[in-house]
Length: 141
Image (tube, rainbow, N blue to C red; front, side, top):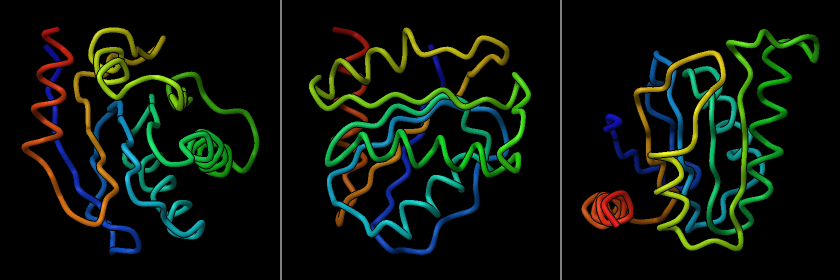
């Protein structure tokens, strides 16, 4: 079983310290952020070691692009080493339970093991217990 953490981010809040090891992330967007803050979060994910990002929720396809651009920008739009390439997906037609199941069981990087999954919850109010329960139910179901 993958180690799982929950991080709540209210739109426009100051970002916490970035994780410092390779991880995969499900970005759950309940509250639409401003474009500038979304760019900062995308850069924070890439700088922190996110190598597989799955976006779900409000305008989630924009997160796919935003994280892709942050990954390109981190390497001055040149070649990205295989072990630094961030895989991105968005899931605007699937229920959250399917995205969480895929994050736990299917999302993998071809070059780097990802033993940490971070559930990044972008919402006005935190709901760690609800999101973690949804994850546990999805993984076991």
